[in-house]
Structures are given as C-alpha cells and as structure tokens.
Image 1 (cartoon, rainbow, N blue to C red):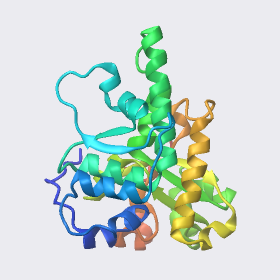
Image 2 (spheres, rainbow, N blue to C red):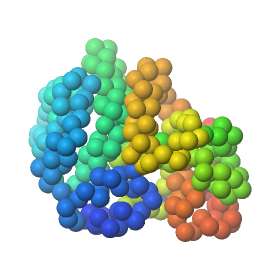
Image 3 (cartoon, rainbow, N blue to C red):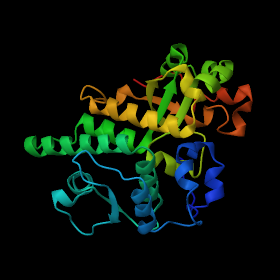
Length: 275
C-alpha cells in the first residue's frame, strides 16, 4: 500500500510546474504568496467570480462546523441550503476542494444537488448510502474528465489497452485527448505522485477544435458539459460507468513514461476489470 509523507505547505511555483495541476493553474497563479490562503482570500475570489449553487444561494467559504451537526448543518445539505461550503483552515483537502469549486463551479453545484437529493430520499426511505451517492462521491473525490475527439482512442481507454493508447498512439493522445483532474482527493494525491495513482475517468466527447482553444475556454466548456451530464438522472448511477485512468501513464505527466518498457508494469497498467 502506498504511504504518503507529510504534505508540504502550498508552494505556488511547484504547483504551477505540475501538469497534474494544470486545470487549477489559473486559480493558483492568482495566489498572493506561498502557504495556505485565508478564507477571506478564497472569498475574495468569489467576489470577482460569483458562484451560485443549484438552490440559488451565492457560494461562500466558511469555517468548519464543530460537534455533531444537525442534518441541515452537515456539509452537503448546508452547501445546498445556504451556499456555505465548510472549509478547514490550513487543510489541503479543503483548499483543493475550494480551488475545484472556483474552476468547475457548475459541475460542483450539480454534484452537490445530486448529494442533497440522494440524502433527502435516503432520509425518507431510511436506506443505506446508495449507488448514486457512491458514484457522485467517486467523481467528486477521484474524478478525472477525459475529453476526446477520437472515438477509437476512447475505446482503447475503456478497454484497458494502455500500451497501445499511451505508447503506440502517443501522438494522437497528445493531439486528440485531454485529461483534467476534477476530484479534490485526487489533487491531494497529486501533491506526491506515485506509480499506482489512478483516477476515475468520466469520458466526454468534444469537437476536434476543442484542443486548439484557450485553457479558460476549455475549462468553461468542460464545466458546462459535466454539469449537464450530472444533471441527467440517468447518468452516474453506478460506479462502473467510470473508467479507471492510470494517471502516470499519460504522456508528459512523468518523465518515467518516455520509455516503452514503463507500460509493461501490469500491476499498474492492468489488463481489465477485476470480476
């Protein structure tokens, strides 16, 4: 099992040089200094770029509640019912969650709505946490958006043909496929990347021109597309809808994958789903 060393404090330059953090680079580039930003600094971002949750409330980052919380004060209900996102100070997990909110606001709001609706139906039926919540949580914590303009490449990814995809079709992957970390738990792992690190891929078809767009336009488009996808109750009902993505196999995401033999590690590049 992989064990992580204590995480370093935020370092702007380090994060801006990591390809895994590319979607968050616009937010990170606006940091005034290294170290954990205060809640006031995160809320100042919201003043510049207001975000509204699905209930119509304006988003704010607030101190974490303490003790046993009533239903409406718990994380997802409070976010939906008031727009308040509980955020611990000097905490990587919560900071990354805030940065993802600032980067993919519509998709995050859509996930929050799914959680709230599932919790409300659970409260009525007293059922256990259902498959919809499990899948929503997996996207929220470990999701990676896979944008693709080539159906054949998407098929190789879905079929676990890692060496064919990432080595033999390397140039096409770099021109017709994009990988955008979404899950804040996945970003936390990306602070100390390791062989074995895997995201849960949600594949979205895009037009070929997408890959020539500016990064802000790409991110806004993916945010809108993912929000629409999540708003459909027929989507993300089962974790099997997501495709595992061995992230350090993506061309350019580690210098180690510049040799063909790297992809012979079948403990990482597994040949198929375990039944």
